[in-house]
Image 1 (cartoon, helix red, strand yellow):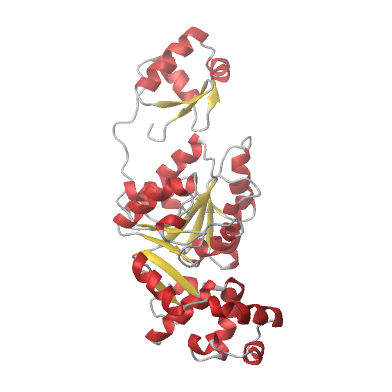
Image 2: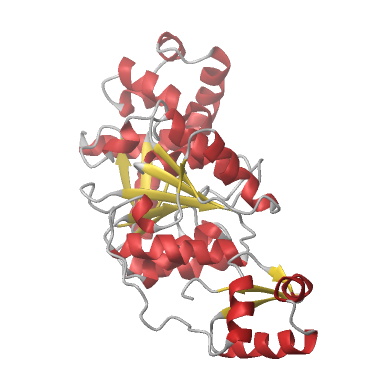
Length: 361
């Protein structure tokens, strides 16, 4: 790419109606983005841009300042990688509508490493949280790059699991990558940790772009596009996570899903994906061959009462009344043994008299 052409890429990225598909049309018609920026209405129309979009661009062009856009990059320590750059991620480039410009804070991981997208519900259950730890941590420890969207719930948990494992993770935003634009604001500390551990924050939206609801479904194609496969951990039937999974399927990438309880709405998405042919995942090695370090200090029941109750508890929370029914133990005994099991770290109290088994038990 001609280096002095970068400011014009940035200015054109600021004009949202052009988007990735129209920018590709302009790339085919004009040799440089500088020529696009100063093109006539007839030339832009000949490139395949709709007349109403051309008219709007000519009106707004006077407000776009290429040099100012370049200055913003330097001030925010952000790198802009265009479709013409050799550094542009090869997997992302194969999309029908790859971002014309990818804004990057931090360092994009080597493409030699396997990249896995991990997405799921913003309201993760205890089961979902355990699944992230069980599956994502070993993968990240083995060198798999974890890609997600920095949202609440499974996204944030996946990023954190990668960091805890000493791995690398990339967050794809539906806003600008500058600190003030990062959404949700509560995860800005997590974003800083990602950058501090050789990860990256990326977006197709210019610096200062605030999050809009319509941006998030669009950015999901980038999460899938940067990855060779997408893992869904808990999702309702209508959720952004399934948009990401659908994008992965359209891109010919692998789709993985963690099966869940038929009684949980958060399992509807993954379970339905499995029905449609997604690869069911219950452990990290279902995705990538990793060495699993079995915990030699697993909980061992001290007596028959503990054994009966422990066997009745599953990763999916169960109510104490169901545990009493299953074990046929007196309520007072169940209450006492549950306290013992919780103190030993074998189970978790999920609130409301629900208990579940921890993933290291």
